[in-house]
Length: 563
Image (cartoon, rainbow, N blue to C red; front, top):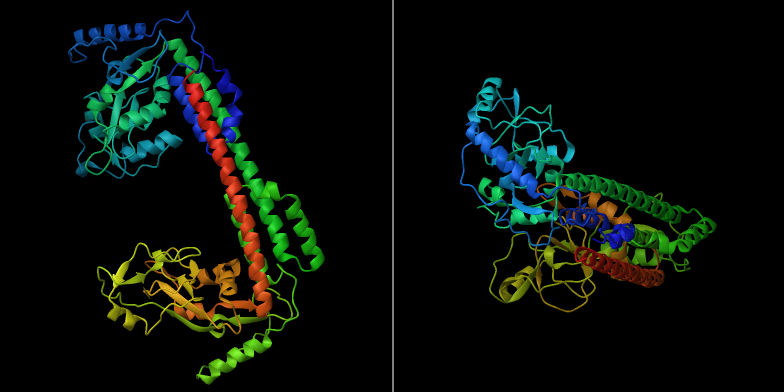
């Protein structure tokens, strides 16, 4: 057996996306195929283990300590779908010990203290961390009574979950003292002293998990029965090889832990460096500091932005720099006159005068910019129908939160209303080109898109319609403001957390944005689009690299498993 390919590519496999978990699976796959350690010709044949079990079983039957069952040819009916070494043998779990469950413990016998009473959920925790905070118990007297029936867990028995997350094993320790729920947990009574470390390792392999799940679905949850557990085929090596396999698996799993820790630390370091670099950009107090911060980002660009997380951080920094007036060179155009005109329009229709700001509410902005509330920047801020209109099989599409995607409106999956109903709904609001539609109810609150096509549809309460006053603010700039950390901070600070998040119209109107002249808004929008395009390219490159690494990983795994 040639393991050279495996060990030569060990670290390379770990570096691929999802590489360490895949590597752990591969280690276990190789282990149960006899491809992880060399076979030793001096090892006794695994058949000797099975013959010894038959001999011990006969003695227990003769002594009256075991019920006699119909004998079966050793390993004759166990089928494994891969080749195993010649001195291994395929057998069934039921041939290696006794698979059973517990005696029924009625709910009325559950106690708040006494002997721990475990269900599948507790066994899962034990398997993962070795201890569990149990909340169910039985009395000592009941435990003693159940002990006389011989099914209590003893050292080196294996508990196996039988419902929900099935097949999770836990080897009983010397000091363990508990009972368990029937059907919820199975027990492998290790009466023939099988090497439990090998069985435990086997019960964590992809082969075991795949095999026990075949036909395991009950009426509502997965179930693993005694009869099925007895029939699970197991590739059984000689005892000495079992020990060598377990030792090698432990060694390689420890190596996986080291590689995983190293990767996590490198990832954390990269994220921290990225956040620090971007923070320096957004907090720079003058042009010189900003220039230095930008050079640091530029010089480490390939290193900092090669993961989805760091690229998303870059997107957020671009948006924040945009609304801070640091993304493009500040123009000379004043916004004051546009604001005054918007003010005059509102006063003409009876709106209250606006309040002025004595200081920058969030951060300093260029001298020729000003802070304004959404209410003073828009001609209309409303939402869709609060009472869902009656639906029809066809007609006018009805737009809900699910139809407002990031950057586009998708009406391919929606309900419909009649033209008559739509006419009534449009009295409240009818989307027009350059309107902003924003989700204002549910987990996707804040997601938005600009209307770019003339299309008739109605809106419901979960979607807000924002119509900027174009004499003072472009829709594309408004969208940048809302998407920016500044905007999202205000959106979610004002969301009412009830059964589901909800952003009321009054809170939307109170959101404050920094406003430059229209000319500068246009330059900012162009620059943001340009930089977001670079981010798109970075993500595409990242996806290609990950796809290549994944392909290489799968190719190496296939070669290793077919050696």
